[in-house]
Image 1 (cartoon, rainbow, N blue to C red):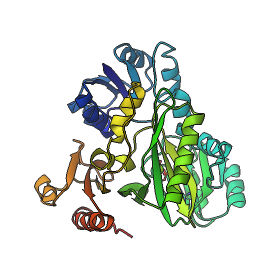
Image 2 (spheres, rainbow, N blue to C red):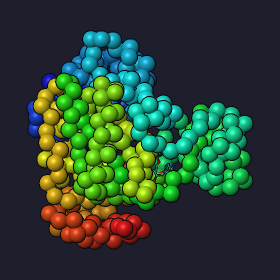
Image 3 (cartoon, rainbow, N blue to C red):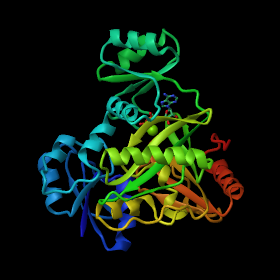
Image 4 (cartoon, helix red, strand yellow):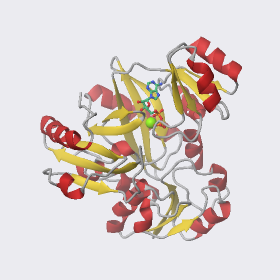
Length: 366
Ligand SMILES: Nc1ncnc2c1ncn2[C@@H]1O[C@H](COP(=O)(O)OP(=O)(O)O)[C@@H](O)[C@H]1O
Ligand SMILES: [Mg+2]
């Protein structure tokens, strides 16, 4: 049984790594020369927007899924009824545009930031007047790892930000003075059955995720996040893994964005949960029974960004799991991650601190 994956990045690679023990095969579609998943399965080389290439992928696969949400929804829709696409293209479309994402949160009663759509310089001025400063200007589409964003602190910042970003549709929103950031990962199967992982605590630096710890937070916060991801999955008739990122302020959740796929903040589930997010995504889209999402202990996941320290240096740390995505080093690029799992939270933090001191001394566990 072959799973087709649009995008052959590290997420696709980890999906394949989770799927081989289940007896699955994989076929990828990706425009790049040597994408991370190419080491595991064949890749059809084509643009994400190429409807013919997508159709060729679909013909050879049981189901088509994504490892990167900025695919052409029109091309996915053109595959027609004979092809099972998971998650549903409507969900991918909603998550591709920050404005439709915010509207969806609001429609479902999920608190989100105050925001305005910005399509002209005049609308930017009006948005800043309505929302106030400081605020954050984001491209509506294609943003990731903090790319396509500018923090506006004073009126003097508007001109430069508009010159740099004004060519594409934008969204302006309040800059939330959050206490911390969390994310929740849910999975919904073909018959509507759902499972939700415990909450992740995420530390970002310059818009890039650096550290995730899980399980995190009290029962109330976990319940709230769980209710939100369940409501979204239900509404979207979702099939697969869905991630929602939140700011936490004064004990309240404020939705930031969602990702219609497995997520960096869920990488700890490979070693730290009964069933990983990657395996559960595959189970969901293939109509197999979902696996348990319970954590097996306390996990910390550290992203390796820009350069990959030597293997033997990293593996000297007891209990560490190294994931090297096989990518060319480049500043700001996610090249791999480390996970430690311990049976109590303080031991896990101690291990994570020792690893951070080695690979990212600028990051501190609060
Ligand atoms: N409105 C905001 N207020 C405060 N911080 C923000 C806001 N929007 C984004 N950030 C910071 O930037 C990070 C990346 O922004 P996000 O909207 O999640 O975009 P991306 O698609 O790049 O992940 C967030 O995790 C958060 O740390
Ligand atoms: Mg984000």
